Each structure stands twice: as structure tokens, then as C-alpha cells.
Length: 218
Image 1 (spheres, rainbow, N blue to C red):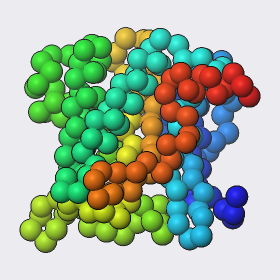
Image 2: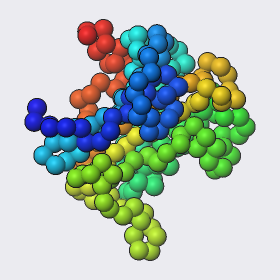
Image 3: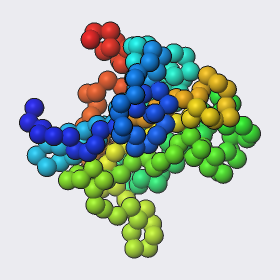
Image 4: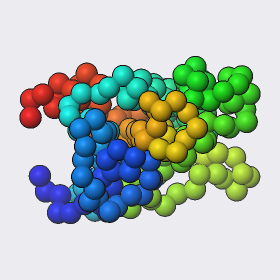
């Protein structure tokens, strides 16, 4: 479709390899029951795409995978609600973090008080990167995140960014065994509009139901 090459080195991590943020060996065998995280994007007419989807190798999410996947998706939707002129990436990040923190507490992956877990940023144990970055002629495109006064840069129409919450629970995490070795990220490319945003990558299947249905058809 006119794209000559990838915009960056593809990340393709199966099972616990999905918990490695920039895993690029991309050579382990995929096992029945694994999730596969693919972070890939084409460069088209000089502009980079940056998309991540996570899907089950065997075509069906198991219960723990589905629970965590839907939590990440809920966090992304909360962040989307803050993508509009006058808001900023800090507000969007806090919205996503709140959902993930409260969800991990409810599941018992984080212990203790939900409000304290959020304020103390204990969710960062499993949400180990920022919410997103500017996107354009480069995958991590130029642009300030804070102004000269140290305040977050406000969104304006025409700005383009990624929104990519994730949950990563390594195999040695001190949590119930059913959660271990699960890495999930969902990433879309967003352009700020006059009254909100446009999701440029909305055509890539994203819900549990959409992904499972798509895989049935392959």
C-alpha cells in the first residue's frame, strides 16, 4: 500500500518476552497458551506509524489474560477521554494510571489500600513506561512535553501522539501464579482535533471479541 519499510525495529514478544519493553530478538518459539505482543509500524511518505496489539497464539484468551487485557483497554479508553485541546499528556497519563492501579488492587496483584497504591505509584511496578509520545517524521518525534515554566504542554489540534498503556507481570513476580509471565500493551496513533481526537489506527482489531473473531477467520 505504498509503505516502503518499517518505521522502526519490530518488537514481537511471545509469553514472558512481552514483559521486555524493547525485546527485538523475535526468535523464541510460540507456545499454545501464550500471548504474542507485536509492536510494529510502517513508514509512509516519511511519516511513522507505531501500533501495538496483543493477541493469543491459539486464538483464545484464557481468563487471567482476558481480565488483564480488558483492564489495559479500559485504561486506554480513560486516557482517550483526556485527549482534547486544553488537556495534556499528564492528565491522560493519570487517568490511565488510576484505572490500572485500582484494577490491580481489586485483583490482589497490588495489596493494601487502593488510594495509597495510586498516590505512592505502586502501579509502576507493572506499568513500567509512560503513556505515550509525540509521533511524526520519527517514531519518537521532536516536541516538548513541558513548557519553559515546567508546566505540561497543552494539546492543540494537529498534534499527533501514541497512547499505549500496558501491564507487564514478569515470571518471578510475587503474585498469584496465574498472572505471571503476562505482558500486554495496546497502542494507537491519535491526532488531536478541534473537539477531541481521531484514532488513526482504529481499524486494527482491539477488543477481546474482535481479536478472537478475526483469528477464527484466518
